[in-house]
Image (tube, rainbow, N blue to C red; front, side, top):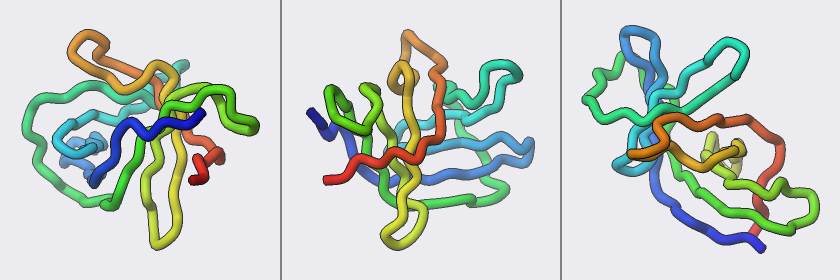
Amino acid sequence: MINLIEKGKYKLIETKGQVKILYLGKKQFAWVWVEEIGEILVSSYTEHETDQLLAVGKYEIYEVENEPKLADLMHLELEVGEGLRQGYLLLTGLPDEEKKRARIIPTKELVIR
């Protein structure tokens, strides 16, 4: 079963302090590398000054269960070019008010509709 949970436009920027910020619609997350953990998204509620625009496009978030060849997790897909998407697994979903951090793992898995 594949459920589309959310879709919209995203923007990925880098600040002057070389911190990547991912905007999913109106939500924003710092995208950081943590030694021995890997990449994580951290809830962010402050304004960030853009030093570099890294990417813009559409995004989709899916909940996947019992699908052959797809992990039973939340999947984030970012449009990275015309007809191209990059998939990510969100092991515990997106960060929120209660859960400030969440792992994000790049994957070759794409939800095909």
